[in-house]
Length: 95
Image (cartoon, rainbow, N blue to C red; front, side):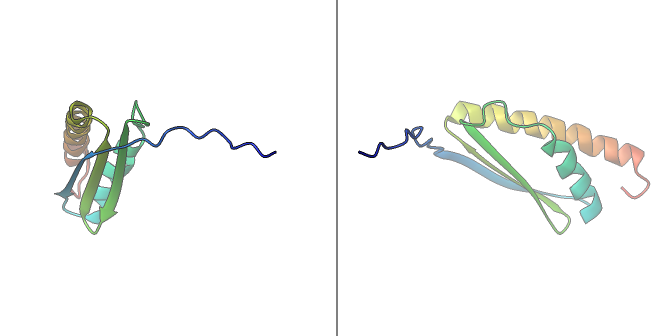
């Protein structure tokens, strides 16, 4: 008799958000992406974040299980993105 492996219930993420931030160059967008990618989501089963670079734009995608969590994740990412962008601007001769 075969036994079925227990699978965790599928997590539904009905709330999502996508946005793009244009930077002066692909290099700066990549620096910002790498900086933001070092921090994983605190609740990975409830929130997914994808950061990609397309040309000179940083493309952000969020999926969350709760609208409140989506708001918190977005706010945290945007605050960190602003800080990273200001740091690159102040420290990079190319920015």
